[in-house]
Length: 155
Image (cartoon, rainbow, N blue to C red; front, side, top):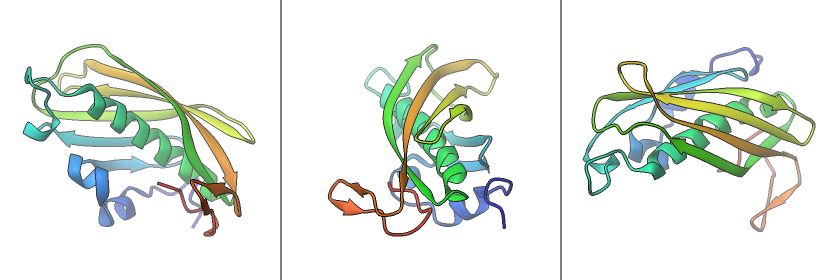
């Protein structure tokens, strides 16, 4: 199996837990060149005015970018961690199924930059963002822990 070519969405959905599970995020596609995920807006996604909370958009953008960068790094024995997340909120959404699509802008030896767009059911962009990620070799230390499992993303 070549993780840079294979779609890892089914395996990600099988072991969906933590934040992704809490948000109801489902992966449609997850390769080294594109990640697509979707979720249906529920009460737990909304801020007091009844709009999707900006933190949800930022978290989803970070998630799809991180998954793509991790899939790319997996084939190279690298893990990734986020360095920057810049998310812009374009239009309000209150309901429906939202879709996030991320693609790489650049992938260097030490960093990657991914761009993502979240669209509403009508295809209108409701948020966009860029995430810069650091590539870590096996044995690197992050938050007091050693990256011990070759190619496993740190979350």
